[in-house]
Length: 125
Image (cartoon, rainbow, N blue to C red; front, side):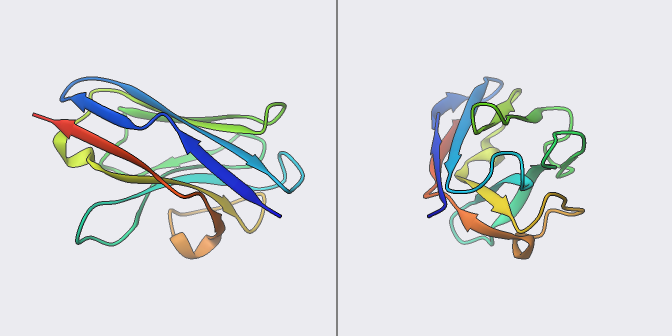
């Protein structure tokens, strides 16, 4: 059974930093691309960042480029999202997701089939 569990959410002031962690289990470590997505109230879920299975390629949404960094540690079955220079518009529920395969070429939610329960991020101005 595949499971993904996020941690590290919370509240922060604009300009601050947070790091999200996601631990996954139930499939071979390093076999799937991983991603972070977010959903604000009244909006569709959107891709934030993805990383291929070996960590060699990352893709970011334009809105977070230069501020967020995705990384993974396959030995620990962990994926991280370092968020710096945060803005009020980053406020959302953040989800960790596992892709269908080792690679992904876009931030489409349709390319990911397993999802965590989400962790709330609130950025105040």
